[in-house]
Image (cartoon, rainbow, N blue to C red; front, side, top):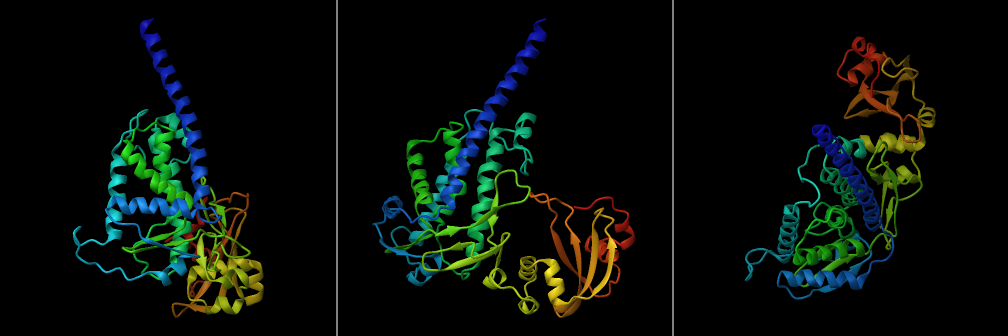
Length: 399
């Protein structure tokens, strides 16, 4: 009887812990949404809060306050940046920006060293669980779910997609800078650790973290230099869409009718389902522009912008062959001649239907370039998977 009561008690404790973790995870999702709002915020910067936080950071590396120069976009910032010579000083051979980098790196290292107070901090899974609730029920720690579902999700949305698309539109040599509002991934993670799980952080580290949190809530990208700090305003608007099949609220840059991000001075970046594209892809794609475009991804986006049926008609593509798709029952494969070469070689276009269903219940069509010697769509489809046509014909379902 006592053994039975012991098992029942342990089972009850597990259920109670799961219920507590579920409530904590719901709170973490609320905070993630809050920080995502800061990362995508399109209202003017809070200049007083920004300058105060940066002044404090300068003081922490024993440097006097800089002169602040505000600009209307990251592109404009590059025109205002002074040279940043690496000169010897009483602090060694590192310029101010490198000392600031060391400051934040040390802070993040210390914060990562603190253990969670409610559960073991081991990281059980290297890939994001497809169902966070089921993962918690099966024994994954709340820490691992928050790591994927807060820091990982915000990094994929803010740092990789939004900031990544913007950075790709700028010259390679940006110098050392910080992303301001788009530092939300790591700031939010440690904010959630404190506010949700009660992670203990010493007051000095908490105060320093709050400086970075203030910048994430207050400004755009910023470039600290010895005598001047150049700060970009936040964008007027950031347009995103949910990532298909994402379970942690990830989004990607997308706007089918204009720029995905635009700044007060007019500097803008266009994106089609997360891929940076020239403005013509969104504003006025044509068969001629598509044929002249050398970038494969840009061509694909432009064709999708027109629509495959319209593009096929406008480009007068010649149908080489069509066949039922054995790897995707109910759908067809179409093989076309193309009016342009790929890397100097003639190619054909295999038009297929995605095996996975989008969020809206539709299946996206996509085109693959295949060698021009293929006349049979099934052979061409098999080639794209590293199979023969006969092997591909035996597939029951592809993804």
